[in-house]
Amino acid sequence: MRSVIISASFLLFGGCATVSMVSGEATVETSLNANQTALRLASDEFCDQLENEGWVNTSGGLAGLASILMNGRDSGKPDTSAYLAQFEADEMTASDLSTLLVEDAEQVRIGLSAVTGEANTVLADTDAKTERGDVTSYERALVKAQRARRTFLEARDTLAGRTSNLTTVDTTLDALATEIDAARRVADDLAARYASIGESAV
Image 1 (tube, helix red, strand yellow):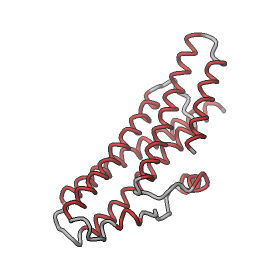
Image 2 (image 1 turned 90 degrees about the vertical axis):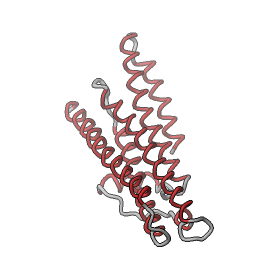
Image 3 (image 1 turned 120 degrees about the vertical axis):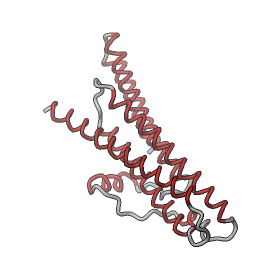
Image 4 (image 1 turned 180 degrees about the horizontal axis):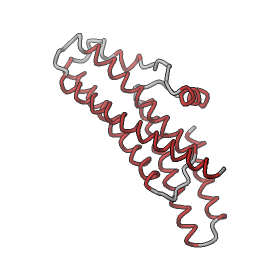
């Protein structure tokens, strides 16, 4: 998947060089494609991080993503047993596990915020021709963030059996939920932008 996206970005830049002969147009086209490519690459890297850390399951491929986007929900259960096993074992103290959970959830929040920043950059450029790839890549990042939060909530419930001091954990998970809600609104705006461009082209 990574190689496909990167290859696509090279094709986009190559297209700009051959299509835009006027210097002003070339500058605009390169800028737009750079923004769109940045969003796709940021989304891809974010999803890779979540999978590599064991916070979500590995990608189910294009068919799985298409099902998620078409049905409007993710019905799959992430395979995060290795991560969650840490909270069931006795190797780490409850305090250390709380710290781990807070740090991991905060990483997801910060990462999603960065991807959302790229999406907002695309939205802010009124000349940008938002493509379906921009929408799906951002939606995929949103889905992965939601899955990660469910993993953390399950870890939190397990940890609750070992300690009642979960204030910081709950505050961090609430902050992640708020970030996800904000990302959901941006995803709607991005999809609406893509739809309006499609309608105007008809």
